Amino acid sequence: GAGVSQTPSNKVTEKGKYVELRCDPISGHTALYWYRQSLGQGPEFLIYFQGTGAADDSGLPNDRFFAVRPEGSVSTLKIQRTERGDSAVYLCASTSNPGGPLHFGNGTRLTVT
Amino acid sequence: TQLLEQSPQFLSIQEGENLTVYCNSSSVFSSLQWYRQEPGEGPVLLVTVVTGGEVKKLKRLTFQFGDARKDSSLHITAAQPGDTGLYLCAGKGQTSGSRLTFGEGTQLTVNP
Image 1 (cartoon, rainbow over the protein chains, first blue to last red):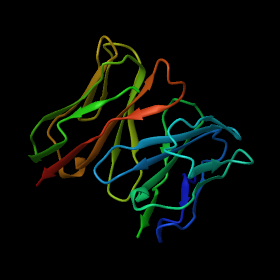
Image 2 (image 1 turned 90 degrees about the vertical axis):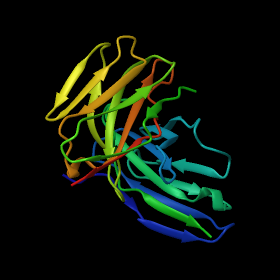
Image 3 (image 1 turned 90 degrees about the horizontal axis):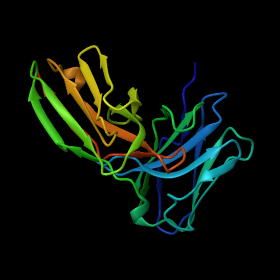
């Protein structure tokens, strides 16, 4: 079956611009996670959704970052006033078992120039 | 914040050698997962360990969860070039809800 899909795969934007990153989870998976990964590092937790609600957003670095999952399926990570330090690969994962094994997408590589 | 430290950070070996990578924390985890990640792709789950002292085998890979559930190891026997990748451990803490915390990873290169 289809896995987790993330679009775009690459995004280049200028400092100060707004970006949206999309995640299509595996059908039926109620839990959805966003992570950020810098080169050579492990994924850093950002936010976790259970259904439509954000169950844990403690990893969002500041108020420029926001994520939604309005219908409990597709999720969008939104970054306002992007900074060069936001450059990273943003990974999305879903699971039918919160806290259990995660199924990751291939990520969106964000580059802020 | 529960931290997972992985060692070594980098490992380069010849085909056929054995190796062990470690994942350590000062915190207790209710479960721990190991993932492997290749360039341009997301991490892929290898195994989940739940019980202290648990040992799981996946072909040439052996995973162990420490008795106190604070550490884990991954041992690879007779490594092959196809084992090359970033190996990540991820723990579910006792007080962190469903949040998974990842280690920094061990970048393994197996040379033919």
